[in-house]
Picture 1 (cartoon, chains in turn yellow, cyan, brown, purple):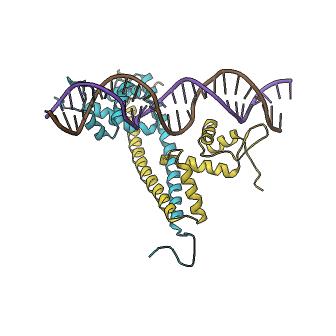
Picture 2: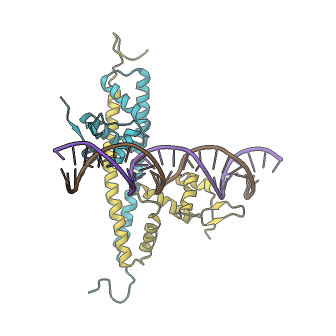
Picture 3: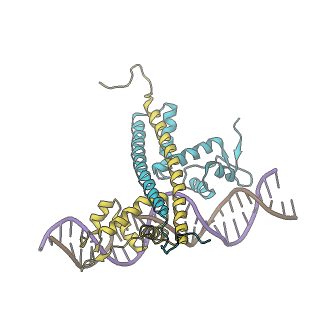
Length: 138
Length: 138
DNA sequence: TTGCTCCTCACGTCACGTGAGGTGGC
DNA sequence: TTGCTCCTCACGTCACGTGAGGTGGC
C-alpha cells in the first residue's frame, strides 16, 4: 500500500516550489525523493510531499536548510512521544526562535502594508499637470 | 538648517540595518550618504535616514535593490504632484505587485504560525519514555 | 596616546536561477 | 517516432557576511 509515487514536475506544482528547489533540497540532504525510476527519474511518495510542504510552511521562520533536518527529526520524535529531555529542550528552543522571528515578520509585514497603502494614497491624488479640465477622458 | 549629520554606526543602530548593508546600498546606488568627513567617514543626513527607513520598510514587498530607486523616485514625484500619466501607471504597477506579494506573505505567515503552534502543542504532551515513575528526577 | 569607530578591498555564503547537453516514458 | 519530462553538471546571481589591514576623531 501507499506505493503511489509522483514525478518531480507534479510535486513541484503541488507544493509550489521550483524543480531546482526540490533538487537543491535533495543535494543538501533536506528532502530526498524516496525512490528513482529505472531511467533515473526521482519518485516522490506522499510522505516525501508532506515533508516538503512542512519545510515550505516553516520557511518564513527563517531556519536554514541545514538546521531543518534536526527540527523535522525532533518533530517526528515528539509525535511518536519518544523525546528525551534534552531533545525536548532543543525543540522548545526551535519553537521559541520561530515564534520570535514570526512576531518580527508580522511587525514588518504590517509596516510594509501601511507603507504600500500610503503609496496607493499618493497615487489617488490625481494631480496631473492641472489644466482647466479635470481628469477623465469621456 | 538641517546640517545635522550622523556616522554610519549610529544610523545602522537607528534603522536596524548592518554597517555592511548600508555600505552595500551605497555601492549599488540605492542609498548613499550625502556627505563625507575630511577623514572619509560617511555622513548621513536625516533625509538619508528617512530613505533608509523607507527602503527597509518596503523590503517585505520583495523589490530588488535595483528597482527600488525608480520606486522611490516615483513616490517623490507623486508627493510633489508631478507624475506624468506614464509614471502614474508605473507606480500603480509597483503598488499592485507589492500588494499581491504582501498578501502572499500574510498567507504564508499565518500558515507558519499555525505550524509553529502545532509544534508547541507537540511539546506539551509530556511523554518521556514511560517507565513506572513519571518524569522529574528528584 | 589610547581606543573605539570608521575605511576599502576582496573573498565567502546561502538558496537557489539558468542554460547546456543529453536521455526517459506514455 | 515525436514531444514533453526528466537528468546531471556547472557557472551565475542576489544581498549581503566576514575577515584583513589600515586610519580617523573626540
